[in-house]
Image (tube, rainbow, N blue to C red; front, side, top):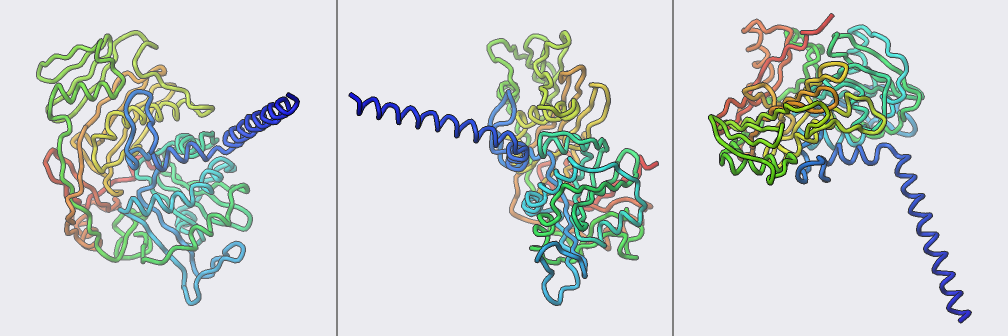
Length: 453
């Protein structure tokens, strides 16, 4: 009997220790802000949306850069025992139109990035020459997100935390100084470049990630007299790219059958939803409705009382209202589009508005190349008073055909822009989806000066 009591006592102690260890592990996980948000951001292997189905791996990484440049100039003072290979006159490694490579490098520098964003000092305006020196004259990494991301949204995705910075950015850079990391960014709403200093971000981690790369000849338009007619920050390479050709289809072509599957993924109850046809397929459940055109455009509308809609904005931790609105819309988009868009991924194009009323746009990209649809975007959401009241989805499926297309070398592409009097605009590859069954990439011009002050 005494032996049994002792045995039970030992087992009880074991159970208590297991519970304490579990609580300790959960507490440590809660104190590591990068773990959960970074996993969801960079891999998307878990189901994201409250309504909907599980998502594909690469299709919802809202903050993955579409271009990155690692710069290790000759004579760079690398922290610790790091050093450039002997005989190297500096390294410039650019990643463009290569989603997998950008994801791999971004995973390595995301830690210093979120540390710099979360601990940045007061932003100070910098001149054009200071911005160019940050990109080319110092040890660091440049990131181009293509879309214009509010910094609170970027930090929310990376860490679930907050930042005092409020700018909408597409391009930013991290550079190493003695004991910390400097953050440079361009505010897309004003065109002004800023600099912030962080004494918290780890310069060694950033330098170590960049020191493993090799030079590939990437350069900016401002570094060459041959490209003075372009946007000076256009990223270029000596050789012409070879983008893939994609087959395109409408995943909603089956009409009411595909509409039923779509609204079910969005969280509609089929038992309380009626379906009928006009010039479009229509699904209605109470004050919520979805209209589907024969071209694959789905439009949701809520017409009921405020606060009773199907898509309330769910507060995401301690982050601000804009991040919660963007993240709610991203999850809705993934529920409806991730399993239907083939090899495309969604990225945040813009989030505009104030005081709880926002228009939030997402775009498609294929291996880092933006897709210009008939409406200019893949999805648009309207958020009012804490709920999504309207959205439109351009549902398309893209599959790599296994072939590539010929593209003019960058020099000829720049000359074509000049011939059309498109000076000062960015030269970049795009896919233009006009409703056909094949996508071939070509050079396009993008005007980034529209909000410069």
